[in-house]
Length: 197
Ligand SMILES: *[C@@H]1O[C@H](CO)[C@@H](O)[C@H](O)[C@H]1NC(C)=O
Image 1 (cartoon, rainbow, N blue to C red):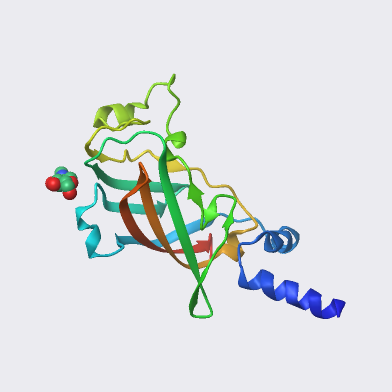
Image 2 (image 1 turned 180 degrees about the vertical axis):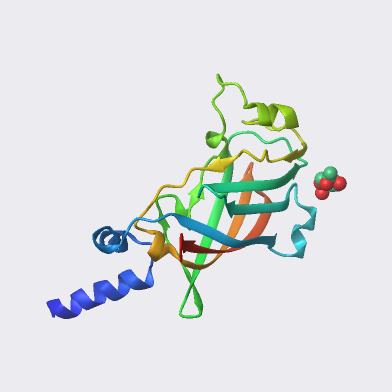
């Protein structure tokens, strides 16, 4: 009976790829590598969303030459954005040809970010020159307008034992919510792989 339970646990772990138990397995065996993102593209969730108050244009997420995550594109908001500005993500990963919903682990997966404004630069720090030059706000509140993401915006990537396990095709549905109202909904498709694979 215990043996069957053990098998059951392992199968559950494998099916929910990205779960805590899997992290335990990864820590033991996998070499540390950087995760790379490929073939990133977005589209509107459906045609009802053409009248959205927030639109993302030519958004690209890519791996830079140094391995960090780069971000580019334009953001057009026709609403004044202030805290809390919520984002809800439902992420699925292709497993054996089927998209399976992932849990939220370490801020990756099907997560809700209660306030995107918290990720801006602090109130007492100056916006970096690249933001200043493009008149792109670096913190909330954000006036109505069209802003381009400065090219030096990036997310540092560390080597991780997750790299081998995270590889695969993903699909994420991203809901942007302001004042309890959905102001935009996008689908994002991308592939993750580990460096040198
Ligand atoms: C920004 O979005 C609004 C509303 O969808 C649209 O009318 C306007 O033309 C857009 N501006 C630009 C520069 O894309």
